[in-house]
Length: 305
Image (cartoon, rainbow, N blue to C red; front, side):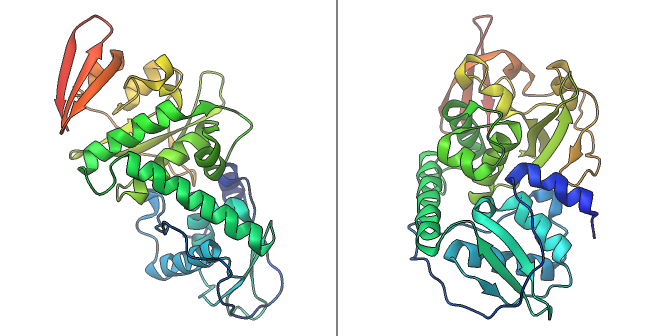
């Protein structure tokens, strides 16, 4: 699953970083105090078939970054795959300058953008913020479907669109970002709660990249455009929740979508979308797993999640 340099550069858009090769290093102990919440080392569901050895290396490096480690002994034979998981799935890469393969291929050396104390504080603040959001969305206390809805509504009502913010880390901490950052925030929070999610990119009417999320609701895969949702009635509705490709195109996106590695994404289409009524959802209430949507025409529609 080796990818070209251009693909890796494309992934930088999501995290605003790049990786490089440099010097050798030795194993070090952690410099960071345990955080109140330990991040799960999750990644884009599109890469679910990644070789297990690459996944283990990713998890080991991600853990080291969360703890402020500098040298990590890992199998470096599949670093293209490892880097792909790091740069598309782990927001704390925003705090990393480089992840460099050692000259003897014994592992990698991590160089940070900040000193050890600052890094520890930033990781702690991020972990605390994530934990606060997860609790607010009912992680561990509601079904996956209700959790998905709660996270969607949280992101839509707690973020604003800002083209200057391109990474998930900043979007979570500051509550703002462009579509890649906002959808990345949505996906990361879902994954932390055990819900698989994939990062998808299309083009708006002007040909500019537009990012959204793809995940499963019930037994069906749908699209979720939370970055557009937040601009409609301040995110109070569900107009971009559980959409087909055709509905996305009706909303202004051009035909044809890809994953973050430029692989073509399969079409999400069906004769009748059971959530089609939500395209005119002004606001909603949720009791248990029963969703009641108030529509623009004054009527209501009820769904069981």
